[in-house]
Length: 229
Image (cartoon, rainbow, N blue to C red; front, side):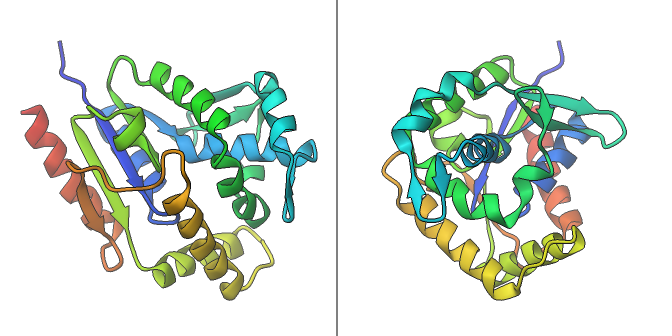
């Protein structure tokens, strides 16, 4: 039987975790799970139901309705990767707006939300052959993953990447707004009480501020091939 491993990718926002994870999943025919999309989808649900906003969070109301949230990843053959569905609706585009980006870290601090999603993530990765990215994959979700990566880059570099991505999608944002969002999310992700973003002791750190996607992909494939050989 072909050996299949679990690849856990953690790191700050806009470090290209999802891009690398998708490439790796395609290369090794693994399942790709974007846990950030899961948190964004819960945030979208909360936003649509007026449980969260810029100046408020109706935490108890959201917790009451967690059982009403059904998340699923469905593979798109044309795109070559899976997209997230919230209660049967493809919300891949809706969850990528700056509006949701500004709220997701607030929702992700809720312990009940994290417990619900970690249970789902465990189910998805039970058989190995999975690439999962997020904030606590190597520390909480899959502490025994055969390969753990920790992606980082300067806040300015990440903000520029994110700014270009949003502009290309037609969003009306400024670089300063995006940079503020990046710094704010870093602060919340690193300092929340429940499963903060930290580098696992056995994770390999990748500062990709000055690395191309191709360079990162090649380096990581070398690591995977060494494990599989």
